[in-house]
Amino acid sequence: DAKTTQPNSMESNEEEPVHLPCNHSTISGTDYIHWYRQLPSQGPEYVIHGLTSNVNNRMASLAIAEDRKSSTLILHRATLRDAAVYYCILRGGGADGLTFGKGTHLIIQP
Amino acid sequence: GAGVSQSPRYKVAKRGQDVALRCDPISGHVSLFWYQQALGQGPEFLTYFQNEAQLDKSGLPSDRFFAERPEGSVSTLKIQRTQQEDSAVYLCASSLGLTSGGADTQYFGPGTRLTVL
Image (cartoon, rainbow over all chains, first blue to last red; front, side):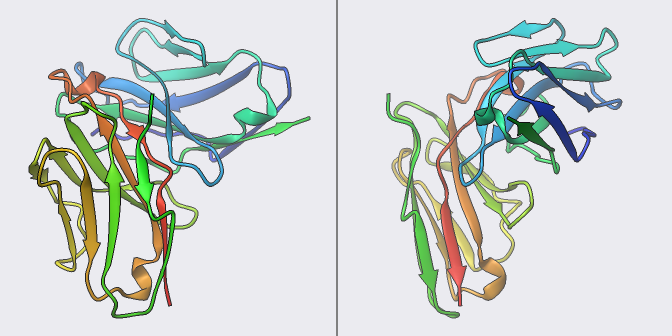
């Protein structure tokens, strides 16, 4: 799977929007962009995924650049429960394992 | 519905002991994955099953690690002659196994924390 680059950490205030960036300049045409998050002492949790178009679900929104070389996970109104490590992962056509990087440690201030 | 469950949640083993970690995937999920997560790191892929077939075991760190899924449902990860470097959280995930693999999403269990003394 192609490599992704994320900031090591980000900090935001409760009830404010959070924009988590991810660069994936070597993405291929068939790679999906997935986001997972891992809360403390829990297994990773699926957040959202997309291919080309922006996506919305109850947890978050995913904005994908037109050239697909970057994407942004948007939490519209952060809560303390959103404090977690967020992983941006590219998935090709094969149904194989996920390649997690170091992710972004999101800190939410009350 | 029920998610992925793993047991035990915590396991302490003496160096040299064998351990067996169990994973119950979501009912009907074709694919099952095992990951190892060291402290402060992201999960690392170990092995993958499609039904009972182990299609990829490239991430298993040594021949002391063995995984099986004999009936295509429950899976067991076995570690023989445990060593201190095996201490980690072992995560199991399952997915529908969509033919468009890139769109397939994985659902993770809570993990088993293994401590080898």
